[in-house]
Amino acid sequence: MKKPVAIKPAGSLIATVCLLLSLLLTTARVGVACSWDYPIWMIRSKTADPLYRFIKNGKAGYIDRSGKIVIEPKFEFLGNHGGEFHDGLLDISFDDAGYADTSGKVVISKKFAFAEDFSEGLAVARLKDTDAWSYIDRTGEVALVPRLDDQTDFQLESFSDGLALVRVNNKWGYIDHSGRLVIPPKFLWASDFHEGMAWVITEGPCSFFEDGHCSFSPRVIGKEMQGEVSACKFLFIDKSGAVGGKGYEAVKDFSEGLAPVLEGDKWGFIDKKGSMVIEPKFDGAEPFSDGMARVKLGDSWGYIDRTGALVIGFQYELADDFVDGLAPVGRWDDEGEDGEFYYIDKRGIQAIPEKFAQASHFFKGLAHVKLRPNKKQKEGDPEIFAYINQGGKKVFTYKVVPED
Image (tube, rainbow, N blue to C red; front, side, top):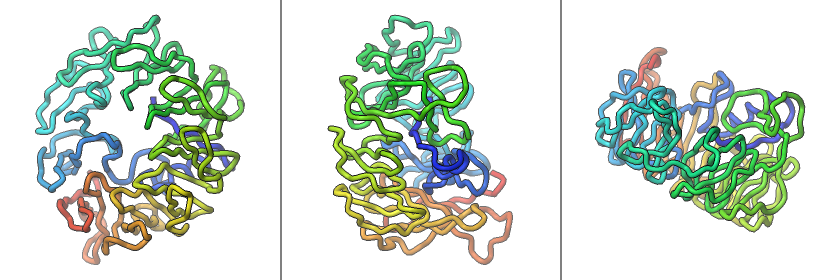
């Protein structure tokens, strides 16, 4: 299940979905084609291992944080989504799953019809021979089969914050690492836990838009028939499963003790008690990262601190999270292929002199960038990418021909 973040329709469906997709540097550029792939690859899960992908001759390899190649390019890849190491293992296939370790050696054979990234030592997998869902361990052996009363129709999700989503007969609940249902399947839709909190939908039928998808139709839950229904209301639960507070038009995950919520047509932030600690006054908002949160007013992004004070004014067409004191900001060019991006510090001052055609957030000391072409480069020449450290030094540079 692709975890959604609901966005209340504003204007046309096209405007709503495309606005969502174009908000961040790390989401798809709407000026080209509607896609939920990222413009540049980067590690996006906070629990992933610090191995960084590069491309050569159409194959993916990996470097470590020093820029040393630890896996020569040999893996297939699909765009800029996924491709992360988790718990020392990489899912190396798409239709017929297997895993490689951090040396590039295949350590789990392709005996699964479906498998996902590892999380908290386990990975969701569906065995070829039995077609049964289970969790496998790092040796590839079945380590956990949920203890469910009715196993005729269920779906498993990855563990997060000690619990995993499970769907039983179209309702969602949560299991722990013993496979025991700790929160009964009673929700129409639900998210992973983050910082001890998850959001759920309890009443339907209703509709919402899923984050990252290019469908111009909302997902309808709570009934099979098509037709117009009201917008979903989102509530938060703790690990006891207790539903607290009122419903919101849209919500995002808790981070650093706060979560963005949409009340009416404005975004604010609540704490885990459900109290509105930063009043709804923004046209867009993202979870806190490194003590700062991205917020939008009109067509521009700025940054607030945990008190809600505006620290960096609304001045950026595009902006991404602060990580280790730096954040990439900038804009796409008129063609939407590349742009002009640079890194700022928490004062809003440019911290790395160079500007880039594309840029990601930092992850454990490195960021992925695409260099801007120089005057000698011609159409069809290789594009140059690099990983930079927080001082702006390029620790690894590689070229990709446009056809790759």
